[in-house]
Every structure is written in C-alpha cells, then in structure tokens.
Image (cartoon, rainbow, N blue to C red; front, side, top):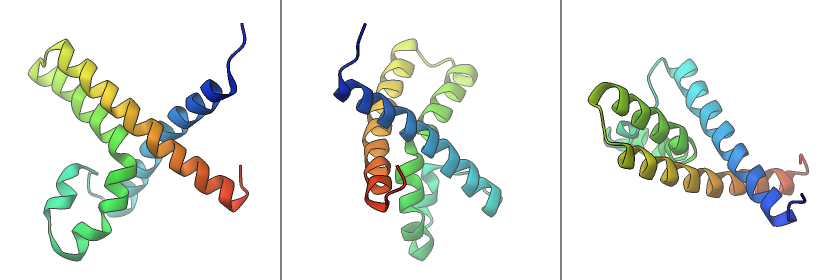
Length: 109
C-alpha cells in the first residue's frame, strides 16, 4: 500500500498541529501559572491581544481538553464529542500547515 505525497503532507500537518498545540498550551501554563483557555481573550486590553496567537495555535488542544472533560463530567452526547473532535482536527491541520510552512521558510524542516 502506498500513500500519496499529499496524504503524507496532510498527515504531517495534522500531527504537527496537535503536537504544537499541546506544546504551546503546556508552555503557557508552565511560564504563567495560569491554565490556557479561550477565556484569555475575555480579559481585555493588551493581555487579550497578546494571548491571541497562543489561543489560535493551541486551540486544537484546548478544544479536545474541554470536550473530553465535558464528556466525563457533564456526560455530553457522543455526537457533540465527535463534532468537536472533527473541528479540532481541521483546525490542527490548518495550524500545522502554517507551522510547517514557517519551518520551511526558516530552513529548519
């Protein structure tokens, strides 16, 4: 069985997007002692503007963390978890492609 080069690139982007999202959210929590989340955008002012890149690139991790936690605690329906996972995967694919392109521009990949 062979994979098309475009499928390999998409898989690389997907995996890199999830890995970078988790790394960024964990690094944010390590350095700020605050939990990364979408509520960072609600603080207003310079802090909200500065947290936009963090939230944008860590969103796949945040979506899945909130969804899995909501499934366990609140008993959210399976369809909701599946839809949220699909959205997080698509977001991860796009952000992973951006990170991969940036790495290519810098000559690191």
